[in-house]
Image (cartoon, rainbow, N blue to C red):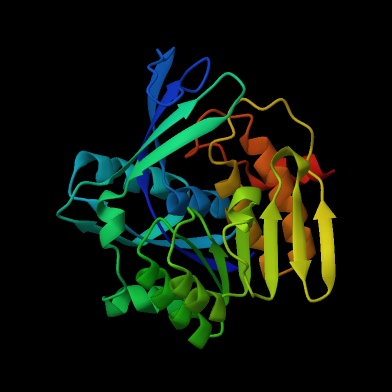
Length: 283
């Protein structure tokens, strides 16, 4: 597996279990509430590490108990946190509502994630030292663009999970120029047309489709009884990044299997399967 650098967000997730998602203006009662580590960057870093990659995370947390808990979770999952900086602002927080059909609605307060930058030479060196860079859009777009340029100049492969949607099209165009692989879901794929060498679109329970100059390949996912789809897309991205440099086609198959397995575990931060479980699902 490759040396992967993830530049992205780290949050504490507050997860509410409900029977049905609330309509606008409605109030529903949750049957339970739990706290768990999350954030797209943290989730993807853990997924890549569990899939066998050597992972370093560049992220920002607050000078608070939440930040310390997030750092401890990452370290316990063999993620190098040498690039996780602490800032004098609150750590990021996400509120996640999950219904009985495993669908979810998520609201994120970025906190420290919104202040992450690559102004430090040490952080730029961590990005330059990777073989594969994986980013998302829960951090400032300028930071993602700076990381992509550093990695590209160093000869690394750049992957971007273009989520959440909403970035300025001009900024997306700049990102596309220095990105090799874009990962989106079906909804995000309709937001903007990515002129990149590889576009991987996740299809939920139906797997994923990989489009490149060589054509289009559809990959199925194992059939499972989903408990919670939160974090499945992050697991897909992390596992894809872990295996892309060795074999992109096999990496897509592994990512589909890992994403399906992730839905069997409640919450986002601890739902990633390990390498053995992924291979068992493929077999």
